[in-house]
Image (cartoon, rainbow, N blue to C red):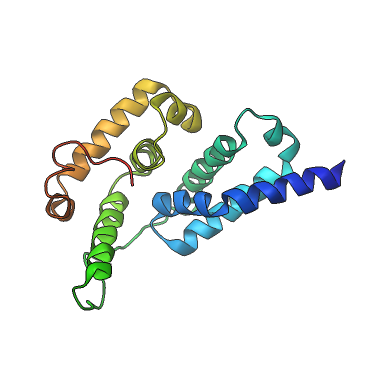
Length: 178
C-alpha cells in the first residue's frame, strides 16, 4: 500500500513539477527560491500524501501549500528582496532580449507587490484561477481576493516599465494571463 502511494506521489511530481516551479517563481521572483519553495511544499505534501491524494484536486492542495510556505518564508526570516531596475548587462536588441526585458519588468513589478497581493495576482491572472479557487487556495473570502486583486493591479498599472511594454494593455486593465 505504501509503495502504491509513493508511486502516485512520484507520478504527480513528474506531471506537475514544472508548473508548480513556475507558480513558485512568480511568487518569489527568484528561480532558486522557487525550486526550494516547491521542494518544501512537496515534502510537506508527501508527508500527508494519503490525505492530499484523496482531495478533489491534489494540485490545488499543493498550490495552497506553496502559497503558505512562501508566506512562512517571509514570516520566519523577514527576507528583504533587492531587485535592480535593469539587468547588469544588456545584450543585442533581438526578439529574445526584448522578451527578457518584458519578463524582467514583470518580475520587478510583481516583486514590488506585498506577498498577499502578489499571490492573488499570480493565481488569478497567471494561473487563471477563478476568484473562488483563489479564495480557497489562500484561505480567504472571495471579497478579499477581489480587493487584493484590485489593489495589486492598480499598483502594477503605475509601474512605468509595464505600461510601456504592454502598450497600455496593463494600464487599460487587460493585463491577465500568460
